[in-house]
Image (cartoon, rainbow, N blue to C red; front, side, top):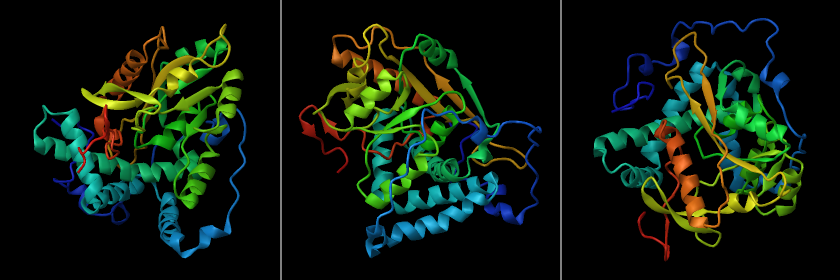
Amino acid sequence: MKAPEQFDPSKPSANSSVPPSMKQSAKSPAIPAGTPTITQNHKRTAQADNKPFQWQFLLPKNWGIWLLFLIMLPMIYLPLRWQFWLGRKLGILIYKAAGSRRRDTLINLKLAFPEKPEAERELMAKQVFVNQGIGVFETLCAWFRPNIFTRTVSISGLQHIVNAQNEQRPVILLGAHYTMLDLGGLLCAQFFPVDCMYRTQNNPLLDWFIYNGRTNIFGKQISSRDMRSLVTSIKAGHVIWYSPDQDYGLKQGVMAPFFGVPAATITASRRMAKLGSKAQPPAVMALHTYRQTPDNLPRGKRPHYHLTITPELDNYPSKDEVADATRVNEVLEGLIRIDPTQWMWFHRRFKHGPNGRTDIYK
């Protein structure tokens, strides 16, 4: 079974075979005069400084990244419908070309959805890459052309954050690696200021691009190794976005089921929940970001995105770290199941077992 909004690369429609630039276009619905733009409505705790440019970024080893960036950046000034078309083509190309990522995705989906036929899992895997291809354009637009998303977002559960903030409590907002990752942060900032936790990229140039792009979205970007900045944000009562849905081994984690599969689950969120004031401890809740419109965006339509904030996890953290990790995984799994193809299944989520690395991806 395939959700109506999912694009099936194996059955290209008549509309998908011709580039949008060769068709008669229709204007998107007009935005009423006086409507605040994304930029005007953006909320943040602070304006972070960009990381400085380094001359080593110009070395030949980085030329591939520069070339890719120079090719992609002009495309974000096309209409969103055309960007979505290009994103679908990009996703299908990567699905066909990136053999190891495709294999990892299919392995993950087989583990998580053993009840589904193989052909359906393959369609899901293709759609993951299609959504990620579109996510590349969504991310670049979130960094450099945010106002294109004016009047494209709705939210449910905002009261959970408002209530915690009214009690002068910080919020640990548990997110996940959805294909619209950075756009989700931009849309959240329409309703509340948010800081984020991040892991430094292995490639310094890629890290420079991502960090500086995100300075236009988040108030603070807190390195996963910078406990001092984390404590400062928590004591200041900020909302802090943290994604605990990847496999970093068991040095700072435990084994807990995720989609019915034992998975190394980091327990940093329960440690974060113990920081700050005992009288006003952090409230821990989860965030889901979701593109509700089809990836083959109809003419004359803008995309629509929905944010969901879950209620606060009660009695969290408990005395049982395995139980806490299981609860977090259950919450995230329930949100991911809304549309599994909008989560990054190409990560090796199950690479560690109780006794260390597994050979599941070999």
